[in-house]
Length: 392
Ligand code: HMG
Image 1 (cartoon, rainbow, N blue to C red):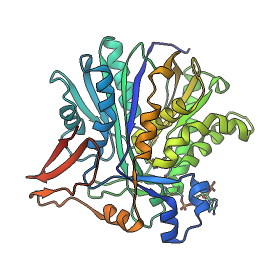
Image 2 (cartoon, rainbow, N blue to C red; image 1 turned 30 degrees about the vertical axis):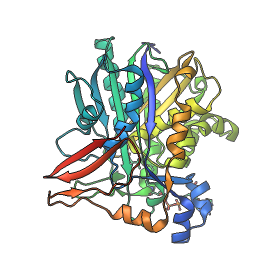
Image 3 (cartoon, rainbow, N blue to C red; image 1 turned 120 degrees about the vertical axis):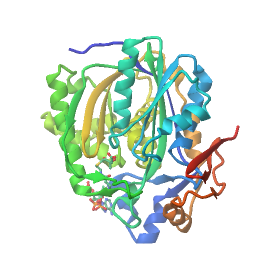
């Protein structure tokens, strides 16, 4: 049973940070053979936020072009998915709602389950559109991936936000039923409230991810999903791009196929172009994979794409989407390339300084160094409040 409800992703836009650290700088610093980064984990560089950037400024920057193109009239819900939350109570989406001038008659909420959060947000949005096909939902996935300096996770850091407009009769991708679902209580990766860098058991996290791949696929098949060879490409969550290859190889083997490297490359290669230079963007990662696929591939109209969303801890979902004929007219390929190319390279010392920054907990008046050249910035922390500013 594959139902086609003509609800899905109407527009997609992403933003990343002011700065970039090439992996060559990290390798020079710690004496790692560069092949481990470029080939072993499949990463070239990582996006690094400026002192006055965060998940709100990136989320607003990702969503602003969507608002510019479609207006605000039909948006009645904003769902902000993140695991880099800046407040235990207030949704980061409320700041974005204000920065973008969205109508007051809007519901705004933040969702969390590690990197899986954006898929929960997407499914939540689809449910709301099923109830009211006229409304559109703004889904924002925004994250900063941060590990301890000199830890194995460090070369997989990154940051980005993806904004998606979800609605009926979408222009880009129709999302299908069914989904394959999986949850297991594992401690593969987590970030207690008192830390700003995540803790991780690297090998355990890879094993848990692969287990989630075969488990979601099993459920997807039992729910009546498509067969594996119907799919043209697969957008996996990419903590590092090599993980998508590992995951797909595992899925092929689980389904009894021998791994054909050319087939693997066709299914995965085009989804890795942005993640390879941005790094892990947690909730945004699988949808950066979709952006790369749509921007890089020749016409995929009518072709099924598989999505595998994994969030440590862990929750995972496999589902399918079909590209809509004419989708290429709605892409933002040049703007996406510009978001990557405009980043300014950091040297290793400047990167470490930024990594070590944390907000003072005294709630006093702390203006933020003016570093970003983007449209939105975190101007200050004043009286325990975050003060944002918009520059057009
Ligand atoms: P590590 O111990 O630094 O690296 O950890 P390694 O020794 O496992 O090497 C990595 C690969 O590089 C290996 O390839 C090596 O052979 C290869 P593999 O065997 O895996 O195919 N290699 C080389 N290749 C070419 N030339 C060379 C060379 N040297 C070595 N000279 C690890 C790697 C990924 C564990 C580490 O970076 C880490 O802990 N990362 C963070 C955790 C992570 O990303 N986990 C992924 C799954 S969990 C997930 O996706 C969820 C997450 O996004 C969080 C969330 O949900 O919120 C993380």
